[in-house]
Amino acid sequence: MRRGWQLVLAALLAMASVCPGAADIFSRPVPAAGEGSTTLIIYDTLGKPFSLVNEVSVVSTLLQRFHTRVETRQANAVTVPEISDADYVIIVGVSGVPRLPEPVRRALIEGSRPTVYMGWAASLAVAGRGQAPRLEAVRDARVKYAGGEWSLNLDPFLAINTVPSDPLAVIVSPGPRRYLAWRDGTKFALATLPVPGAVSLIFSDLLLDFYAVKQTPPPALVYLVQDFHPGCDANAFRRVVDYLSARGDRFAVSVRLKSPLKTDDLPMPDVQLFEVLRYAQTHGGRVVLRPEVSAEQVRRFLDEGVVPLACELPSGTNRPPRALEGISFGTALGKIEAAGPKGASQPVSASSVMNGQDQTLIIPLNVDPASASTTARGIAAEVAELARLRGTVAGVVIPAWFPFQKMRDAVDEARRSGLRGADLSTAPNWIKTDRAIVTGKNVRRAFSVPGGSSAERITFDGNFQRMAQGGGETPMATAILLQQK
Image 1: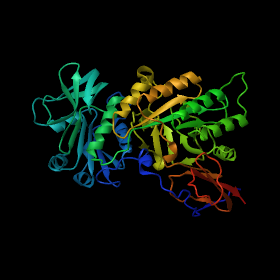
Image 2: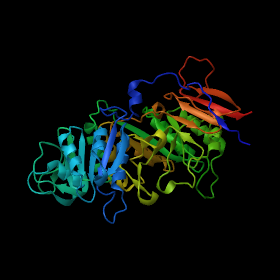
Image 3: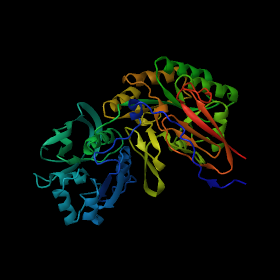
Image 4: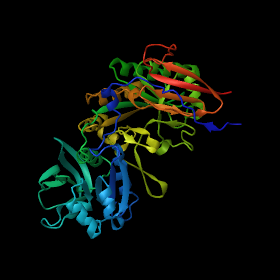
């Protein structure tokens, strides 16, 4: 019978600090009001008529980039005390201009707290100036923002007829010059909604100014060799490991222990699978658990000298019935999704690491050859676009079933950005199951272990080789193997 859990103070599993520059790559920006700040989203309706998209959920999901607590209120229910309690306010007009109670409208006009007006609500930022704004749809628009030019579709777009004092994003074609985003002191306006694509990337970058963020991490590139399993070509995988390692690129590889393929070819033997994964670890590879991996299999990885540091989130068609059951974790890689109607999910274009459920750090997989956007535009274009913005992370997916030349081409395209593959080991990596606890070198916390368990503590060096007890080197990772007495 499984014994009850009791809290036992475990030793802090990683004691040495990580250099600030490396840790910053996987950090979330802090607003000027601090990590305990509150952002209040005020909206008219959650979605447009006859639409299955929850627009407010998309906005709140994009705010997970920042250290801020998000609250939402419908316009007709918001109160002046709620405005007063918020450090930041975002007003979203989805189907029309939000009808704010008069005391709330006055509090927003007279106050100095940072406020963003989006979609139909952008008209509130130009109230009383010129003719009424009009709603348009702009296809293949060229927009100048942050010193560069962007191509995007705007639907909806709220055209204003005045020239703002401080334009931030300007539509230069087609048609006459129009304004997509602007500011007036602490008041910001975005004359559209953050639909997937470049609009969401620009909005996320604008929020750095809205929150008056003082420090942003440098742009980063994360490679994920996705879904390596016994049905893959071990030689092709080893060659791409060598190719990445030769240029000093770090990378992640997501793994499952059973092949999903039904072919006449014999799958890779377990001994070969673990051997090539150990080889990858010594050449800059960081192992990530696929959604199909069970809690019992985590111990198998460790027994074979393979140290998982993070998990891959299920997304789209790769959703198993019960993903990562019995496994908790600190860092994940995956597609960023917002909650949609009736429990559905909807894609979000994220440009940086995000805060996930239970304070999990999520590294976005936002450049994927399987996506329509990357297929149409190419890996190089999408990575370069992300690298132009502040504090971004380009998560490049390289399917492990690609032949070597195609994997190499994907790496070469991403390298044109001038970025090198970041090291996942500097993220807050930890994985916990009933039988094992694994932590990376950037984790400081205590864990609970089952009552009546005995524990064996193992540390791993930079090449993921077992270290002797009392060694002077800082461990790359630590594992506690649990055994019921």
